[in-house]
Image (cartoon, rainbow, N blue to C red; front, top):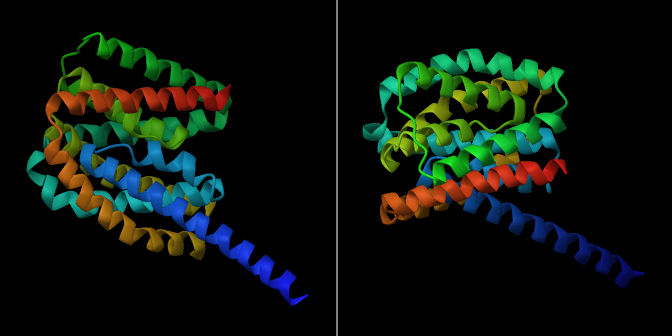
Length: 254
């Protein structure tokens, strides 16, 4: 009897340790990616966090840790932020956030994500074929609006900004600095909306606190990686992440 109980305890302990290791690896890789490129935490973390947590919990943990990363890097990236574009992104997102919520409530999510995945893949291919656009104030506002709509509809604010900056041949410093600063706004608003309409729990905040030491390690390693990546490699990494996002959303619906 004692041996059976001990065996069950060991099995439970093993599953718990496996979960901790998986959680730590997810947060570490996503933190390095977000710190070194200015995007990617939601893309990398959310699908895998859903293996460990309920959707609400996974989304809120993602939002909390993304906010921590952006806030921690604010002084470092301050000189790289294009404040004019940032302001226009914020203005655009004010319109995009409620539009995204309306789309989320009215449209079938399978069709929505399928359409978004095809759009991301098509635009990424165009960028890889050297298609470029000229940035303007109206297009800045439009990109911010799309990002806001993407945030409240599918929980991914990054792809519109990433596609826009890539299309205008922005430097890696400008892309990372401006997007991370924008995330402070968009993720804070998204977290507030989540807590107000979906509620929260002590477990979410405990899990987020557990991930903080891993985030700190990711911040350190990501900064080293950012200095090592040149502009050409940064662009290729951008395309790879966009392709990953589009393919992930597409396969998720098939």
